[in-house]
Length: 101
Image 1: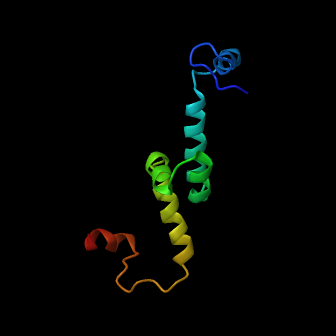
Image 2: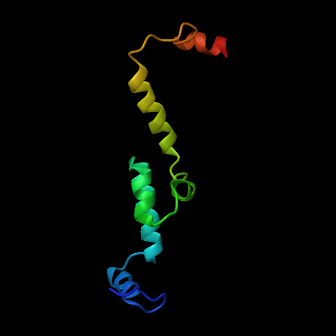
Image 3: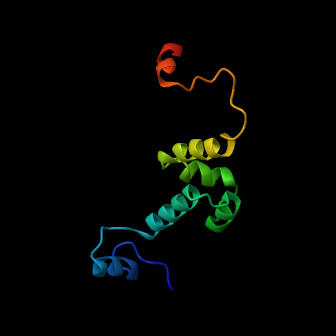
């Protein structure tokens, strides 16, 4: 397929016929890359697919979009290390947590 024209090309026509919000091919690329990173895709492979010279360009552009990614990292680490002997200084009882703070 030929590259779509900005105002009257095949892609714009398809979007209008689909009766969805205005969107561009670049928007779809951005969304796809962001979702792939959020899902844990291999950044090196994604970077190559997107044509970036190195992975830092991919990460700088797409990796900061999902606030809940930090929660997922924390949860994954908790699940991985919860069976390990807990830190001796760790306060786990709710009434003692307020006093420790």
